[in-house]
Image 1 (cartoon, protein in one colour):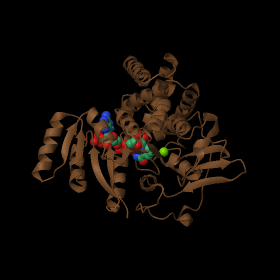
Image 2 (cartoon, rainbow, N blue to C red):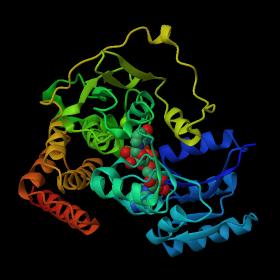
Image 3 (cartoon, rainbow, N blue to C red):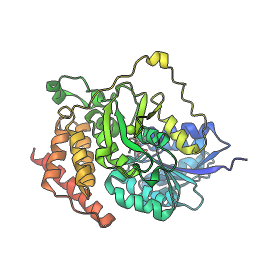
Image 4 (cartoon, rainbow, N blue to C red):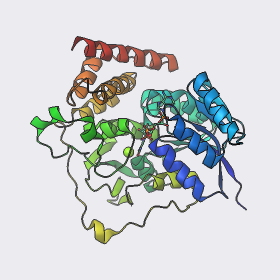
Length: 394
Ligand code: NDP
Ligand code: MG
């Protein structure tokens, strides 16, 4: 008999949140929604509450909470509406929760994801920024809390599937030579370099293979996404940056590969649909139907591979340098990138300036060793200030 698992979905109104709820709804015998959280899309959150009937819903402030509570009562729903950052942590760490989908975008997702980890939950990690910011502390908290951490990012989920069950002994010990992290190259992979300064947020968000939130879409266009993923992979699999190679693979059918010392290379393939890694992590170590169509290799027909062009994608170089520098460098890289991407989406800067801001911040503020979460949050704040000042003086 399957025991029903109670799930909190942090960032339920986003792209990953909605895909997660799609999978959950296919398996009412296995999963029940415990809490849903949203931020600006409150009408969407209300509609999700009506469908999934969670015990709790979380919104950013009290005014929104009162309105949502009244609306839910009016339709006879018992959902209790909470508000604020502390409530996000509470629904992530609640004693009755079995698994938490961490799908808030950016640094805002760090505290509730850490709360879930500290509480020893099964944590499905989409929010890569949390791990990039505080990798060492985060992985220590996973051990301390006894959490089960399962990667949702399609590449890391693929790597996890291609590694042996005992990979935590060390990649060298299990015969891994390299991890090959695939990247689509995004919408600007072949655009003439002199046209990049004129691209719009709409063009940057129109990813050729994946449908995602706006921030990660811009990160994919700049390849900062792959840079963040490189850092994420280092922490998840205890790898050095040198053990990870980025491979541009425009079709996004191979989601990543593991190269073993005997010459075997294992890959995970599938249609580019996040419901596959979400289903994998939700059901792990079992397998469940995700609603994703079977891969049609005859329709795919060919798989191409290229080396990444770091002249076109300086963000990838900056991320690799931050990974090598360690300490607070990845947190500053992430913070500067969040400010830069928001400014680009608001049309305050041009696309190539995203990398310029990040490079400026990393040069202006030396990285220091991470002692505790405060060190990370201070570095995050300083990087944001430096980036904002760059924007103001521009
Ligand atoms: P979306 O922008 O679609 O969704 C983000 C979610 O976070 C929304 O529910 C949003 O609420 C909520 N949110 C935003 N800001 C805050 C805040 N300050 N406090 C609380 N909640 C907030 O992003 P995605 O779903 O695309 O991505 C989510 C995470 O997953 C990111 O870290 C991304 O890098 C990662 N990821 C995504 C993939 C994808 O295919 N989309 C693939 C791999 C990783 P609201 O919408 O109500 O404002
Ligand atoms: Mg990814």
